Each structure stands twice: as structure tokens, then as C-alpha cells.
Figure 1 (cartoon, one colour):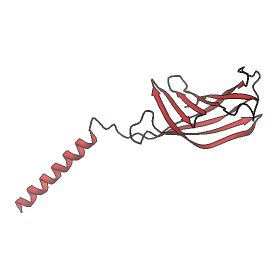
Figure 2 (cartoon, helix red, strand yellow):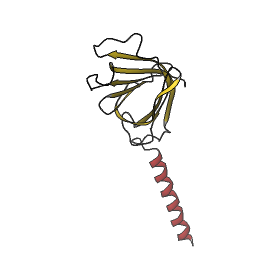
Figure 3 (cartoon, one colour):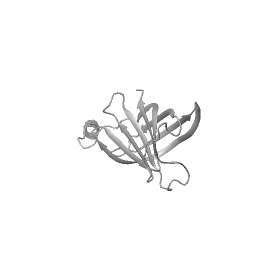
Figure 4 (cartoon, one colour):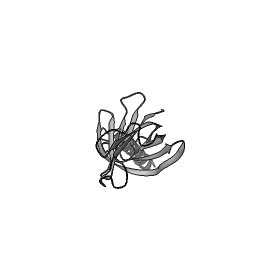
Length: 159
């Protein structure tokens, strides 16, 4: 009976040591919940096929955006993310991007940079208060479908 108690005590101590060492391992940061940045699009900038900023823009833009940064995955710089963007034109929904998976490019001094394909660059600058967001598209169709070559939507976070 005494040997069983001693064996059980050793097992409990060994498990406690394993759990403690695994949870305090210096190489593994604790898991964090996803970070959501939400905000309003404050303006858009459209550049013509001749390289001039269209003023006024092709149309007025406002809207909302949500950028979800998944910090619970393997350590990546920056972590995976997706964005939802709703763009309004003259007060009515114009473009809706419900779920766009973003490819991580860099995280430097609080500035997250992502892409979607070769045309779209998404940036979140968490150094500003509030954080700023930009969505930039360079079109590569030689202006056959529109009278502008690039567009940018810019906004601020409301959290």
C-alpha cells in the first residue's frame, strides 16, 4: 500500500512539473485571441490613367472595414488575416468584399502589411491613434475597363 502511494505521489509530481514547464516555456508565447480592428473609410483617392489624382474623385467614398488578425496560429510575422470591406457610393452600398483572405508580407514597428493577389496591398498602422487602414489597388488592364489606374480607400479605427 505504501509503495502505491509513493508511486502515485511521484506520478502527480512528474505531471505537475511537465505542465508547469510546458506552460512557462520561454520559446512558446501564450496564445492570444484574434485581434479585430474595425473602422470607417474616411476617403478614397483615385489616380487617372495619366497619373494625375482625380479631383474630385471618380465618386465619393465612405464605408466600413473590419480587419481580423489571427494571432492564435503559428508564429508568423505578421500573422494571417482577412478583411471585410463595405464601400458606399452616394449613400448606397457600392462594393462589398465579405471575406478576403490576406497574405502576410511584413510587420515592422506596428505596421502590418498584407496583399491579396498582385494588385491589392492592405496596410494597418497601429502606431497612430486611432489606427489607420489603407486598401490600395493597382489595375493592370491598361485602363480598358475604367478611367483610373489605381484607387486607395483610407480609414481610421474606431477602437
